[in-house]
Image 1 (cartoon, rainbow, N blue to C red):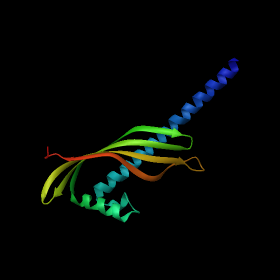
Image 2 (cartoon, helix red, strand yellow):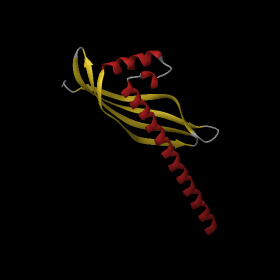
Image 3 (cartoon, rainbow, N blue to C red):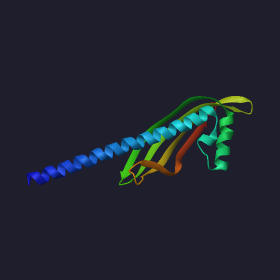
Image 4 (spheres, helix red, strand yellow):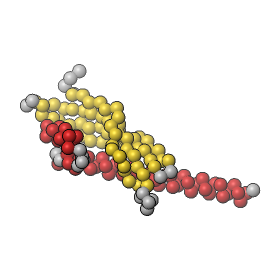
Length: 145
């Protein structure tokens, strides 16, 4: 009986350890994707973020071209759910930038909740799949009530 209990505890501990490692890997992937987006904005190059969708890339590029400076671009991972070889991560992005709008420089503050999906490949490596989803977007101009 004690050996069975010890085996169950060992299995639970091993699963929790694997889950924690998986979560750490996924969190690193989310933060690496955010770093890529930050680099794209700093370089004003939408193709780094959106290589395969010309309409979406052009829309982001127009906003990038209007941006005169980036004051903050932060990402906080809020939740990671692992279900076997698939996982979903939710992260919140806050973006503060100065934009030239019709010859007037204005501060824009935006926030969005991102949902990203991940899958382990045949070698056990986590990879993002599908599109990054934007949920709960908010944006405001600082000079407007």
